[in-house]
Image (tube, rainbow, N blue to C red; front, side, top):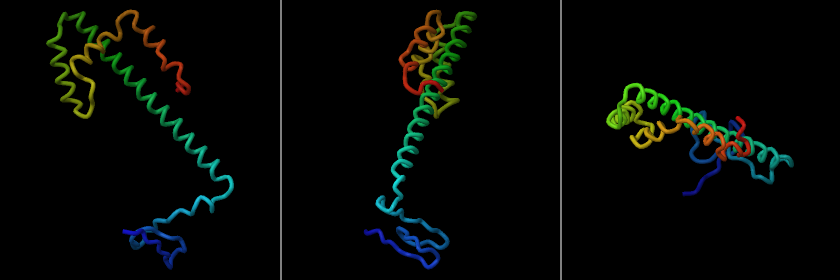
Length: 139
């Protein structure tokens, strides 16, 4: 199966594959045909995309840790006030998985880990994590 290049009467650009009425899918020119500064343009755009993707992932990770912290604090507070234990966490795990089927991380074990996050002394351990020393971590 070879890709055919066709010129249309409407436009002198070449297209790949089957021509569709009113749809133009242009074939890019070769790199040799690009202006002298094109590699710098491409490189700069790729750097922006890479940097922003890293920032987005780091931002999502920070938000996830903060969510886990809030969940853990809520569980810990209620557990201390009401005195319930593992059976409630098991049920909570089941109900959260049902309410948010597209998410992971709500196993009983993870909920117990979340409960440990806001305990005294943990904030220093989290704030001194290597993430804070990563280039581009300032969001």
